[in-house]
Length: 62
Image (tube, rainbow, N blue to C red; front, side, top):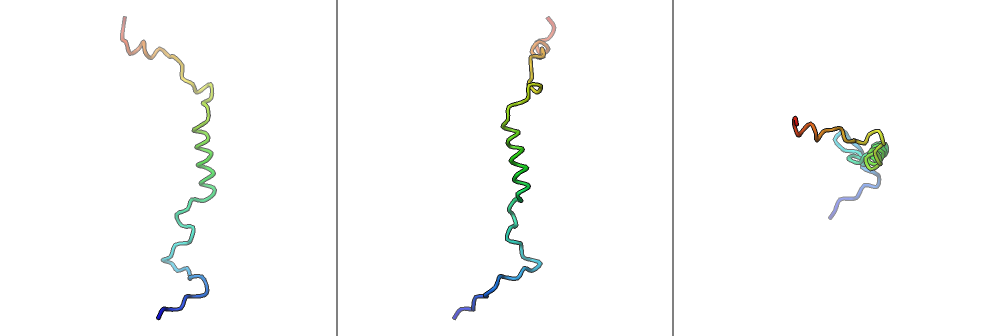
């Protein structure tokens, strides 16, 4: 013989986790999406590194 199944939802006690536990919030997903889009975007022209004579400094005095 089996126990009867309760008709209503299970009560939430202090030791139980809510159903959405472990799922990221929509705001967190949107923030991560903006960061990933910024990561994939082309760098701004000011951010490009140019030749700043770094190779000449490593070669030593001539």
